[in-house]
Amino acid sequence: MAVNLKGKSFLTLMDFTPAEIRYLLDLAHELKAKKKSGIKGRILEGKNIVLLFEKTSTRTRCSFEVAAMDEGAGVTFLDSKSSQMGKKETIADTARVLGRMFDGIEYRGYEQAVVEELARESGVPVWNGLTDVDHPTQILADIMTIEEHIDKPLNKVKVVFVGDVRNNMAYAWMYGCAKMGMEFAAYGPKELCDGVDPEVLKRANAAAAETGAKITVTDDDACLKGADVIYTDIWASMGEEDQIPERVRMLTPFKVTEELVAKTENPDDIFMHCLPSFHNFDTTMAAEQMKLGYDIREVTEEVFSGKNSVVFDEAENRMHTIKAVLVATLA
Ligand code: CP
Ligand code: NVA
Image 1 (cartoon, rainbow, N blue to C red):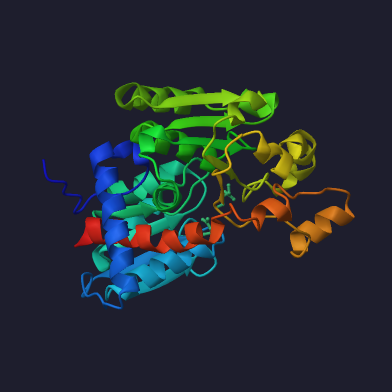
Image 2: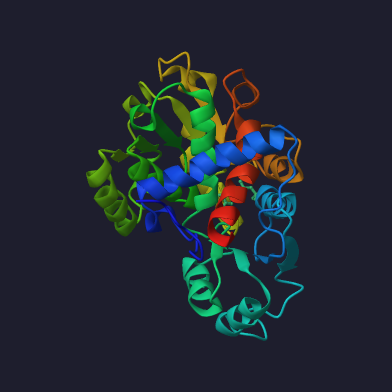
């Protein structure tokens, strides 16, 4: 059956079939080739979208803006300081107002319930630009990048996510791998493995049962063997900065070093990271935390800048995959 996503929100990969995700990935590859060949697009001409950010962003905001503008759409950006949302106006009223003016709404914030409410109340497609428990547009970009660098079908690819196994990226990966029939291990300290939401695992395992995917959460480094992708993320996500001392204590043994990567025993493995990343002390946050005695680097400079690192291809692909989501749901 032909895939038609027009009018549909993009809140989590769990709402999409493997064929629909395949469609979005193929469209992203196609739109990337189109942009590289210099063809200007007009697929979204006459459309207007609004971007709501309650947390900071570089990649996601820029991806939505460039993707929309590349295809002729207008873009409005609102952050929590410059809008009434949440303070003087409910989420539901905000959604109803924005739905009268815009053809689609991007939201980045805390609770998943907020993107769900925006989608319910606005009457237009809503796209999840990251919540505390999911980051679906990132996974599309990551899978696209895997397809560009690993010469194997997705159902033969093994991804190991190292670190904070109960954060939004780990959960988003569980869903992505489950849907696309991939092998996935979340590798982190026992305390964090024990904190993985059982509902998330249950949902991912139910999808995995249909696709042949394998989802594991473990503190055993044996899971690294045979990995095609080593993926990590910062140790304290946005909103969790007060937990840095605790996270550094738990996660230092899981810092992605050349020694850890060697355990894949796969010379063709790739290193991936959603970014932003602490891989040196050249940011104010990494430097300030080091002064307090906390080394918050989740990956070493050698791995981050090494020959197997594809992190900047991944960042670029945020834009191409977000463009695919906009085109598929709006045009
Ligand atoms: N990876 C990602 O979402 O980056 P930003 O926080 O910069 O948007
Ligand atoms: N886990 C990170 C992802 C950033 C893209 C965070 O939520 O801050």
